[in-house]
Image (spheres, rainbow, N blue to C red):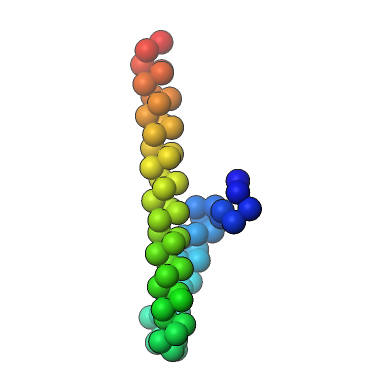
Length: 67
């Protein structure tokens, strides 16, 4: 795993924490901007991990069907 990369579970947890803070309404506009950017990055990371996992699973299933 790359140094800056976090796990899927950690990314989801961070997204949930940020969304909770946004919903509380105690965030100024500058914080909101930074947090929205961070959530966008985390969502992309999660989406990429899910696509990679889906490809790996499909590859395994295809190989299993060939046997």
